[in-house]
Length: 79
Image (cartoon, rainbow, N blue to C red):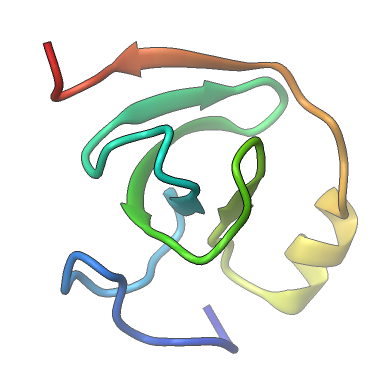
């Protein structure tokens, strides 16, 4: 990623495939986002119902834009 923070709330580096969510998804939750693929919740800082997905470049972020996507929980560390 070329902008934003370098470390997530979990202390791991920001990288493609990591996302920020509200507290409705615990850290470590794996989500499948239609049209994007799997992402792992490792950061906070967005409202409930929203995701901020790390990508490789600003160009890639603009190509995705602010969109509404279907999201499925693949794995949740909370049982």
